[in-house]
Image 1 (cartoon, helix red, strand yellow):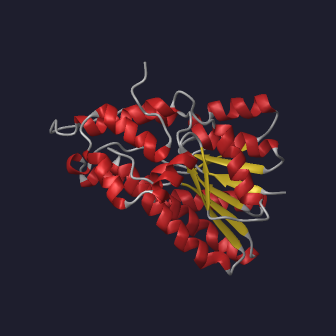
Image 2: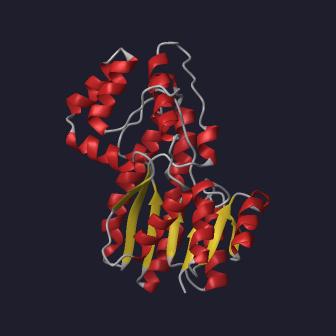
Image 3: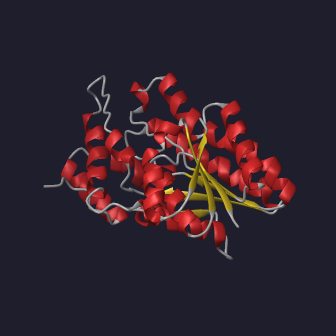
Length: 291
């Protein structure tokens, strides 16, 4: 029986993965900051005829993380798979984003993963097996415009995970990155901030929202990410990175094929139509204004 702990299981990708993996016969523990946030998860699990065990865990609190991991191990006897899914968005260009705003995003998206890995790794090393899946983002591969705090956190997750994969390979522990593109979740509805305090970055924010509007016409679904999580944890041919969701494969391939000069020059294009045309040429994605 595979025992999994999924952080941020009260909504979006985490909630979908918790129910889907429980339906595959896994014993799933879904963490959230307080149990009253788990009503939708409980309802979906009941409708699917499965059980997801709720666990209180605030990934910004080391003691809370340690208690949650200890609770799962005491109850199930082991943790085979840790899915570090808890995360928040963060819009803003660098000039206008405060250090405190960067720190708040980092504390969830990066430090939360560190806390959870540090709590579970002694147990996985002792059993000489385990799988850690860190949910990054396509923004961990390509520097999505006007989302500097989010991008910085996800690029940090990418580097952290690359290093961790080597550190624990000799202990029989598999580590991988899940890199969703645009997926239909509640975080999209919440991620509408456009600070633009100076008024100098209208174009950057407009292009960010045009990108998401394009993706949300045919977004990936949480179930698609659940399938990728399952594959990453169970495949006989492990790989470090798994991409899914709208734009995922195209953005990875496009960025790998273009030069750094191409990337910088894309941002210098003033006309929005010309920008969209060049973006499509580079990535094969149509982000021209909808409607």
